[in-house]
Each structure stands twice: as structure tokens, then as C-alpha cells.
Image (spheres, rainbow, N blue to C red):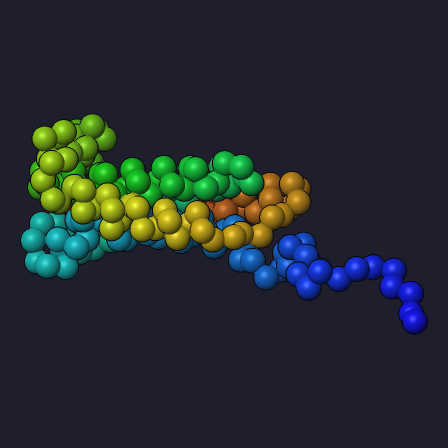
Length: 187
């Protein structure tokens, strides 16, 4: 007869050694959300690729600027408790703006010419048609579900602060390059 010091239940611990290394770095989540909002929600790019609207280069530069702006916003808020709600907000806001741009036919020049963000929102009457709810579900709801069901590595506070600072400066640079270059291109 042997003496058992610990009883095994057959279940493994949630906090196994090295588990933190298995989850992806939170910077990948920021990059994924910013890429989704900058490319998938960029109705001007899809119109330009279809041959309607602005040039594809201007639409791509607008997407780069949006990518940088969303990445900067999320890098500043990429903390344990704030990241997922703010990323969900960015995804749903991007989907709402995409629906408004699609339904109203807002051109790229008009959007950045001083109309403001309120001109990009869809009118409330368009919420009853199929375009805006489809954008909200496909471009906003599905990525939010993927984001909330994902697990991300938890970093110590000093390491998270350093990663956030580097990412914020990089995204700010990309946003400025995108918007500045787009503004300098001829119409």
C-alpha cells in the first residue's frame, strides 16, 4: 500500500506552466482589428476596385490612415480590462460607418472634405432596410464574436506599457502617412 499525498481528479489545471506563451500577443489583436476596420470596412476601396468612385490608391491610403487611427486608439487602450470592449466598439462603429457610406453613397472627397463623422452615419430610416443591418452583422457582429471568444496573452504591466507605447507611435506614424499622402494626391 502506497501513500498518496495528492489526489488527482483527472482534470488539468487552467493555469498550467507555459500556458501564457500559447496565447497570442495582444498586439496581434490590435493589428487584426485595425486591419479589419481599415480594409474590410473600407467601402471606398471596394467601390474603387469595382471601378466606381475614387482612385484605388486614394482609397487604399484612406484605409491606411484609418488603420493607423484605429491602431493608435486601441494601442492606448490595450489593457486587460479595456481592450475587448474598446475593440468591439471600433468594430461596430466601423461597420456602422461602412453601412452609412454604402447606403448614402458618400464619396471619399466629401467624407474628408469637412462633412464630419456625422455625415457618414446612416439615417435611422435605413436601419429598416437590409444594407445597414447586414453590414452590422457581417462586418461588426462576426468579428466581435471572434474577438470575444479569443484568448490573449496577459503581459506584466511594465511590458504591456512598453508594447503599447511602441505600437501607438508606429500606428500614429502610419495614420499620418496615410492621411497626409491621400490629401496631397490630386483629385
